[in-house]
Image: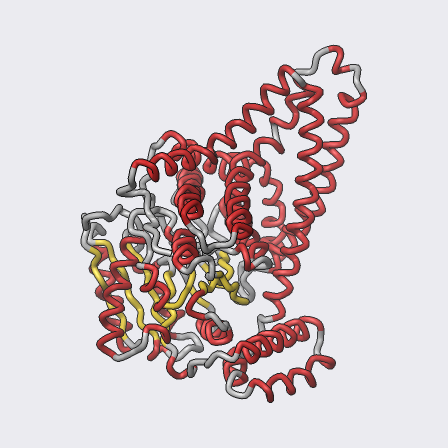
Length: 548
């Protein structure tokens, strides 16, 4: 479907629809928060009943998420020792590979058994579809790294991880997409990195993105798009087919594991509709895990958990942060949006609309590491984390554009439209309201109870029911603590049991963190969108404390 995935240059009808859907998420969130507060004052009995019902729903949702969090972690652990090069070789003789797997599965231990069963299923599905599989030797990787404020010590570890990985570096094209408005030292460092590492890749280019191009906002998507267009010219001159290129847009602090790009290449080859799919690894924030303040650490571990949970439901998975896709698909859809802040999720929705709903995200059974937001002081770190989460929450800007697309599309099934509408709207509203409902608003009926209500059974049982629910929630919290410890980087001197214990105790900060660094940024973003106050792109400060 031909649809301009933008809020710019709209006709009168589309502008009205756009504005209506911009108001909707924030209006719902404020209506829920203010409605429950007013009910607590004037109708405490009804408010208490609603809050107890919400608490019961929340605890069931919590257990549901914890189950799938454990399942996703089990899959990640089961693939931790996978030989992805061997998997790629299996694609050359799928019948022989399936027969070999059938013999190995009965004798394998549980983690390995899960991995082998998953591999067998992928091979059988790929064989059934009957589509040709490109040669692995002809697959190239394009990695775009947008840079505006990131210093050399932030960028270089990621470049080193790319050239030291298991994927042949001579088939990797790296582009440092540098903003023209970046400071001279940043631009100079990028040129130095390009000169130092160029010979270890197919090429490493430092591309300067001009400032002030017509139609562009100062957003990462505009920078990445400009770099991708330069890459297209480079690949065309080299005679490399776009359909054989996997493009990854990585944050400047992204460090990949040795097997990450090989895992990506295998998953790309093993996906029948490979050019109509994005590929999402699990982000973990381990680069500076021990130096960052506890509240920032817990919040970013929670972000990793959210991605683990989402990976269990690929039908509704959306790209987040560092992601990959077919370069041909990127060109077909017109690259990343150049006027939107939430480019990482917007490129998925733009692709989904372009391919009439025949587009999906394939989760990768591997992780990549990034920085926990950190500054020189705790106070500055708190402010930076708040701004970062507000920028993430600005992904709500996709909702009005997607709704306009759904109103004109005649090819996307209604069931898909309803499912995605509910998921997107419910996700943003929950993000902005749950922290407040679960903390102080949930206790307002007791505070404002009148004499008649204070003599009711609900007055006495309500707080007890809520207390019991939160006691059950501690089981889910314990699961999160255990998994957060298991996900910690292995083999570091600082990874002691004392440090692990301290990190486990940091999870007691969750109620405060969820209010001030999750609920409030989300409500802030939705309110700005509702009032028509556009959010400017804020680049998360990447600072590393000097090690002694």
